[in-house]
Every structure is written in C-alpha cells, then in structure tokens.
Image 1 (tube, one colour):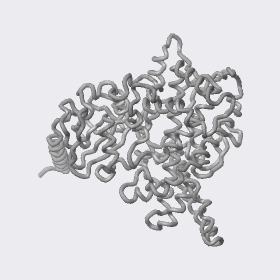
Image 2 (cartoon, rainbow, N blue to C red):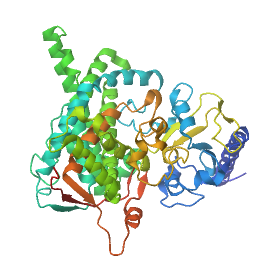
Image 3 (cartoon, rainbow, N blue to C red):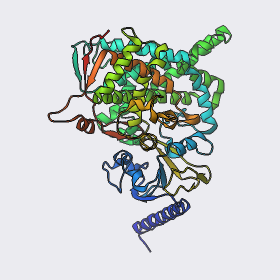
Image 4 (tube, rainbow, N blue to C red):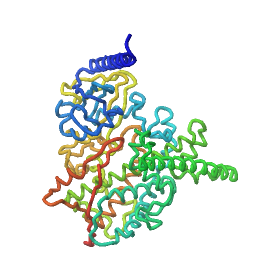
Length: 530
C-alpha cells in the first residue's frame, strides 16, 4: 500500500491531469488563437508572490515588460496563455473594439470570482455583480451630479492654495520634491473626503509635516500604500512584525471608523426624519455618503450597513489612489516633454490669464484634459479588467487574429482585457510610447474616435461612475500648478531624459499600477507673461 506521501503524490498527479485535460479542451476549442505556455497563471497566488520575471514566468508585470513585443510576436491582438504547473487557461486581449463589445454586455460577460478582490470590507459598486450591482449603481450614481463636480472644482482650488501655503512650498522660487506623490495623494484624498463624504479636512491643520489629523485620514493613507498587498495576503500582516502589524491595525481602525460613522449617521437621519416627517431627508443625499445611507434605509437587507462600508472604502481607495498616481505621471511626462509643457502653459494663459479657473472653463481647458488622458494611456492605473463568458461565445473582428477568422471563447474561460495593450494598440495609438497630448485633439488626424477606443475609465454599463469627478479634479489642479510653476526633472550626471524615464517611471503592478518608488521633480515659479 502507498504511504501517506505516496497517496498525496497520486492525488496531486490526478489533479494535474484533470487540469491539463481541461486546458487541452479549451485550447482545442479556441483554435485560431495563438498559444503561449507559461509556468503559472499571473492572477494566482503563486503567480503574484515570486518577485522575478521571465518569459516562462511573466507575472502581471510581463504585460509592461513585453508591451512592444507580446502581440507583435504573434501578429495577433489576442493570445491564449496556458499555465503548465498551476492556474487556468486564459485569454489576454489588446483589441479595443473587442474589449468594448465584451465590457458592454454585463450579462453575457460577467466578472469572474477571481476579479472580486476589493470587497473585504463589503460589497461595492466595483465588485458586485448582477442585480446587486444594479442596486449599488442606482444608489451612488445620483451623487455624481453637476453640483458635485462644481464642488470638486472649488475644493480642489482651495486645497491647491492651502498646499502652497505650507512651509515646503513657500521656501523658495525653485523647489525640489523627492516624492511628488506625497502631494497628489494628499490632494486626492482630501477631495474625495470633502466632496464624497462631506468631511472638511484642511491640508495641514495641525502644522505637522504630513498633515494627518483624523482617524480616517491616518488610516486611509497608511492602508492605501499597501492596500493590494493587504488584500491579497492578509495573513502576512498578522505576523509578529511591528511594521506589518501597524498596517493591519490601520486597516482595522479604518474598518471600525467607517462602521461607526455609518451607524451614527443612520441614527441621526432617523431622528431628523421622525421630527420632520421625512421632509429633511434630501439634505443627506447630496454626496456619496448620504446617498449610500439613504439607500441602506430604503432597501433594508438588500443593501445593508456592510454594503455602505464597502462602497465608502472603494471610493476612498479608487477615488484617490488612481487619480493621485495619474496626476504624478502627468507631471512627470510634462517635465520630460518641455515643448508640450510650454504649449500647455500658453493655452492655460490664453484661457484664464491671471485669474483663477472656474468650472465653466472646463471645456476650454481641454488640452489639460488631453495631458491627463495621455498620461493615463501610458500608465493605466487600472491595468487589467477580467471577464468570462456565461456561455460559449464567438468573437468577431478582422483585426483580432492574423487569419481574420472568428474565435470561440468557451464558457468559463477568463478573458483579461489588457489596458497596456489596448492603450498602445498601433492601429489607434501610433508611436505608443510617446507623450503626445495632441493625439486627443479633434483637429488631429490620428484622433478619429480615439476617446471611443480608450478604456482608461472602462466602458459600457460599468464605466467608472467617478470619471467626471476625477477629470474635474485633475483639470483644475493641473491648470493651477502648470500656470504657476515650470516642472522639470533632475538628471544624474550624463543622464538623458529618456534614461531618467527608464530609471524612474518603472511601474509595479498588482490591483493597480503605480511607480515602483518615488517620482522626484523640480518646480520653478513662473513669472507672469501677461
């Protein structure tokens, strides 16, 4: 009789044989798609924890490292990846047209279970599916109104001047900041706190260097820097290591604080409605927090306190992590491309002169938005979207594979929409590595339906509900800082700007893409040319 180890080995072999047979069936069904064999699936626990890259072990970072070669090698905009040792067969996609078709039908192409990783604090509008998603979407969408976007602009402008009033920004006319993300993260956090949840936090209330004053303020900033690691490997943060335990305590503090705020606000709203006969409920529905509280009271068990907390968390995370890093990347690209920066500065001056920009200037400041979009295209913070067909589905597009034939995707196979690939697709984005904001201009020959082919904020029914929130914040802040400051990079001796970009703009990719380290920039105060 086999030993215990022998039986274990037999079980492992049987599991592997079953998995490989399933993989063979999937490959056979998807004939016509080029196939690439790898060791581990990149969205598995094994595919995430080993910190190196190779062709046989590409991990998520492989989409970045191979951004120039992955699809060109096969002359295809879709590739089947087959993990040999662990993980399921998946398809990676770089076709904007096919991706849009998939993302447009949430019933035929739902999110797979593996995509639901940001719901540890509760279901939310990002991770929920089916009828539950529709309930979440109805609850939060009305809060993102024109009034909200106007408020975003005003709060962003106020915070910009509060930032300038700190000692660091008042210390001279030429400043060097070793990490500009410190300021963009602070800005984005305070904007979402004020406009999303009516939490009026000042830039530096207590005069400390980081300005973190409230429990939510400290917890969100602490957690945000390690959020992906905490979500994927929660057990690691409970090991007896003080640095890790500090992060876990911050996570627990955030969860406790959000739950307490939900309970307190619901009790307050109950009292107000009881005294007024329900007439004063509307005053609580003018921001995301209030809308979620009202939704939980209206829908009872279908939308409970955990759903409110889950959405509060996801808006703090998604509402400031992604915006903050795209602002960093925009400034870095403008610093590298001085001609584009000067073009943008001259346009800003032509629109606002010496006055402050207002929300009504938003359409006239389109070139600022183009810079933000171009940075998001180059460095998509949400770099993948996962979908799986609810039944065998045929994909049809003449550019998908070299043979131009239709392709069958079997039920249950995960399709990874690769935003690095789609946003560098040479059919729509020629010279894909270049920072070229004018490609977004209607007067540019390369801009035909460009916004329609860009998936940086997703598309279809699940398009980012905070898209206008983010772009109003970005256009206001970038307009102000580019009006007042000339941004540049600090090169090492003998270093070129391209070498600086290769050295500094190196992303790390888990649930989001951000730079793997600090992004240092210099700011020189401009004098008026008026």
